[in-house]
Image (cartoon, rainbow, N blue to C red):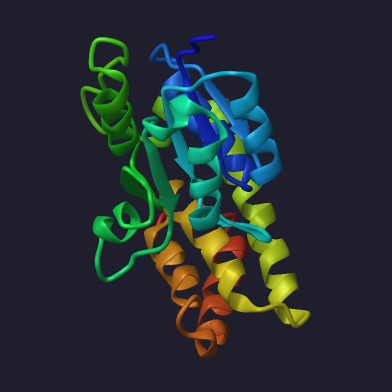
Length: 221
């Protein structure tokens, strides 16, 4: 059965909330799942007009999942699937195109970029326009924005504990860095994302994170 909407495949619940809030108010239905099993089940239940696919899905790899999706249903062969990731390959978008994707929305992302992507693939007549870039609180509402920031603080505290406990900083940096940037903390985001290539930067990243938490995250860096 024909179904208009977007499937978001991402293991971070905060992205589920943000994408749903930003696009839901513009007439776009968003279904969000966290892993490959849930994604494959979702496309068996209904048809989507666009799929946003994270690359690092816990133990799953979006670059492998895109091929599985394409084979699941005839309509998926032509459904636009866009990489939604903090990965920044040297080849840029062509890296993802060569691996079966139709485009790339880098994390951290701006609301305007997400909405422009939806308008491109779903049609400008079906997705409301964003007239100007606005603060997160204005786009999501004060209560929802405060909840997102609170969730970020929890993620930061848990991430510090994970790495201090011996976890590999690279996947943790990927997860936290994208979220921090999207929520408006560019310096904190850059610091965490740097761990993907330079684990030795952890003492600096840790100090910056504790400073942010100690100041209740009030200062957008």
